[in-house]
Image 1 (cartoon, rainbow, N blue to C red):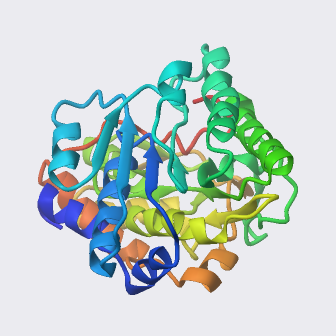
Image 2: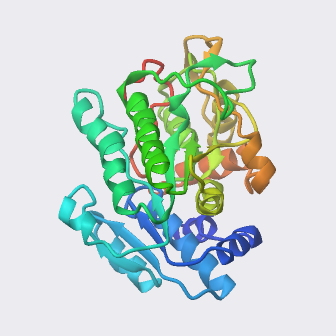
Image 3: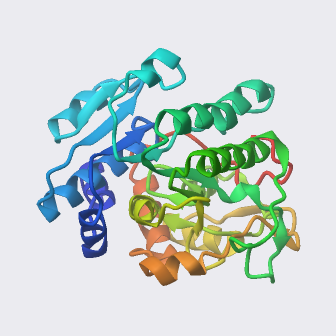
Length: 338
């Protein structure tokens, strides 16, 4: 993965399990939020899995498509592209029907000071989507931030653990889950809720954040001393495969890697690869935002790329000046203000 093209190909490479699972679903797949940081690779993965299985279905990509050229690129690759703002009631109403809907729309960055907009996007809008697509299967992206900080010795929160969101972003995401659950209970809409943290690829994620700090000689805050990370391609695959798990009330699934990643050790490994000595500040706290994704791994296996491999790839990418998305995760924040 030395070029953007090679990275995109790897992100969109379907497994045999994904091809088989999508073969068991009827109807088209619609991806709402197809222009976000996850959306394009997920659209391409759905297209590739559909082609590999020889299935006759449309993959419908819906977004405002603010990135120049993205809509045309996805259209050229076989997607049915629908430029639309799903927050607009008329645009939402006029979207085509689809048996399977993947809901990726959400707000995180810049939420401090714009809490009202965060709640609109993360809690109100999902209800409008669920009402519009009440007869579809829906896989909706949520976040591990709905859980509280837990002891690093706990093994992480499971799907049966009590929620305890910190800050408006996390609370609004739990609001999303509660609103979607209401529509599942009311209409019998089959849903899966994907509690994801922290997805990484070479242009974005915790490892990119750390690599940039190490390369720039900026201090790495150790207060959040342990994190979960997972290869974005695996998260995309699980999100699509979770359509087959959708039920009412919603099926809840933690999605992350099986390992706890030490921020200190990751920074040291990145530093060694980059030829830079990391600078640290603070000490590791006894708690962190951690999820246990054993249920996911039992269903779908382990991620295809390990954290050690991701560190190697990330260091090479950042050192070589590879393009970045410019969206820091702010994983080190412990007060929920993003």
